[in-house]
Length: 111
Image 1 (cartoon, helix red, strand yellow):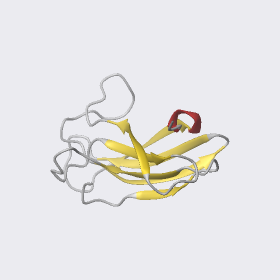
Image 2: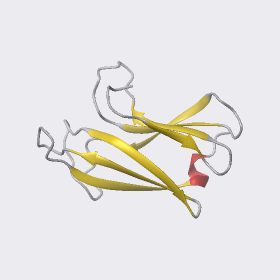
Image 3: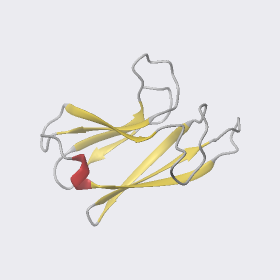
C-alpha cells in the first residue's frame, strides 16, 4: 500500500472495504487507485478491484503515467459507492484536481 491516506468502511450489505493505492512491488506509487473488498460479514479481504489507473485515456479526468491518485473518501448512497479522490495529473505539488468514481455496490460482490 502506498504511503497515502487510505479510506475504509463497511457497506450496507456487510462487506468491508479498503480504498488505497496498491501495487505488486510496493513502490510507494499512488496509482492505481484500488478497492479491496471482503465477503459480507467477513473480516478478511477477498478481492482487489481497480478503481482507476493513472493513464485513463478513454474517460474523463486527467491521464498521466505519473499521476498520484490519493486521499480517497467514500460514501454509500442508494446502491452505489461514491469515491472522491485527488489527481495531480502531470503537475507536481498540491495543485490537484478532484475526481469522483461512482461504483455500483453490486459490482463489488465477492464470491
